[in-house]
Image 1: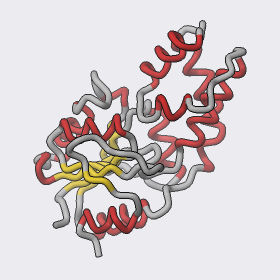
Image 2: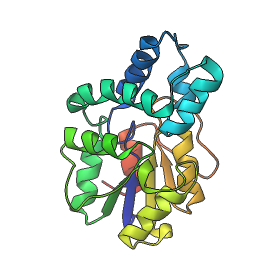
Image 3: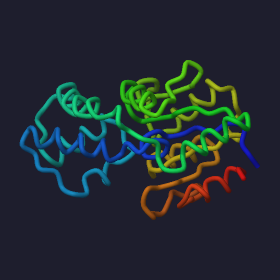
Amino acid sequence: MTPKAVYWDMDGTLIDSEPLHEQSLVAALRSVGVEPPVDLHARVVGQAARPVYEVLREQFGLGLEFDDWINLKYNHYMRHAPGLLPREGAMEIFRDLKASGVIQAIVSNSDRMVVDVNLRAVGLHEPAMKTISRNDVRNGKPDPEPYLRAAWLTGIDPVDTVVMEDSVTGAIAGVAAGMRTIFWPQDRIDGPAGALIAHSAAEVRELLGLH
C-alpha cells in the first residue's frame, strides 16, 4: 500500500553525492598532510560532520579546529556540487510518488548549505519542499529526532510514513522513529533490524506500492 508520506535521505539515496563527499574528504585531508585509508569513507558514511571530525582527530591526528576543517572540506564540495546527479531510479520514484499525492520531505545528516546546493543541482530546491538538515535538530541520525521533526512538519503520523535510506546510520534512525524503513544501500550489505531491504529501484517501487 502506498504510504501517506515518504521521507528521503539525501546523500546516496536520492542524490548520487557520496562520491563527491569522499573526494572532498580525501582532498581536505591530503591538503593538511594526512593520507586517509581507502576504507575511510565506508567507515563514516551517513554520519554528520561533527562525528566524522572527531574520528579524524582521534584516529588520524587531524589538528585543525572544527570550523577550519569544515571550511576546507566544503570549499571543495561546493565547487563541484552543481554537477551532481540523482541516484539512478530515485528521481522517477520521487516524481511518481508526487503524482500519487504522497507528501515527501528530505531528511539529511548534512549541513544546511549542503542540502540546499544538492537540491538545486537536481532541480528539487522548491519553496514548498520540507527539508531537515543537521543544523535543524539537536541530535542527528542515528537518533530518530530528524525523522520525527519531519513528521511534525508534515503532520503525518509516523505509522503512515516510509523512510528511504542508504546508510545503516540513517536506517537505524528511521526504525527508531517508528516509521517503515526501506534500506536501499549502494552495496549489498545487511541492514539494521526492522528495516526492509531493497537492492534495486524496482524492489523499492514494489515496497512502496508503485506499479
